[in-house]
Amino acid sequence: MFRGQVNIIHFFAFCLAITLCGNGPVMVLASTADAGAVHAVHAVGVALPVAHLSANLPPPPVGSLAVSGNVTINDRKALTGTTITSDSVINVSCTQGASAIINLGQLGVVELAAGTRILLRFSEKFIGGNLIEGQMRINAPPGVKISIMTPGGPVDSEGQAPAALPVRSGKGSFCVPMPLTGAGAGGGDGVILTSPQISTGALV
Image 1: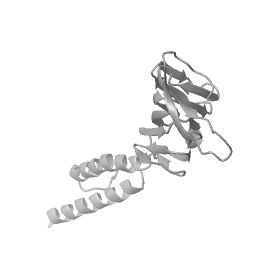
Image 2 (image 1 turned 180 degrees about the vertical axis):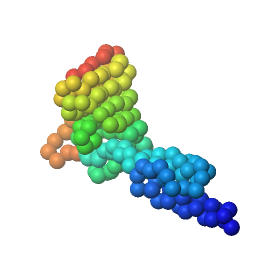
Image 3 (image 1 turned 120 degrees about the vertical axis):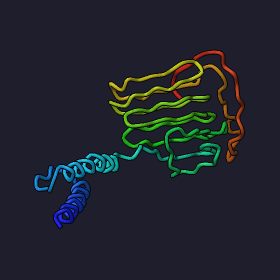
């Protein structure tokens, strides 16, 4: 009879441990029948709060896209309002007037000119990636580090001050969109030229 009472106490101690873990830290139960019940409470109390805390982690940042002309994300056509996640490949066609603007919220804004292709990465307080070709500008507040790898070398900012950082691919190819030929003319396909020189400067 006594052993049955102990088992019942063990059961209620286990249930109480689960209830306490769902609401916060587990308190030590002093009124359990024996050391085995206390061990059961501690075993549950160690495992469950970890899952409870991980559920409260902030979601990764995302960007919002505004486009002009033909723009793709991961080789799929993108429209204004498309959500961008880190590690996306963004390609802006080499056509007159084509561009893309990625609003990263508190991280800042990334502008891509016609003929730009980039693997864009971003996380909390960081904007980076691999500029394959083209040119871009990054506007970021203090505290956001920037690191863009280009064919001509890395372009970095430590985030100690607000950044308005222009970046060109430098070595490799770059886009020269065809100019408009008359009133009402649409933008035509541009041409890709090759430059042997490293260049960083304002967008054109």
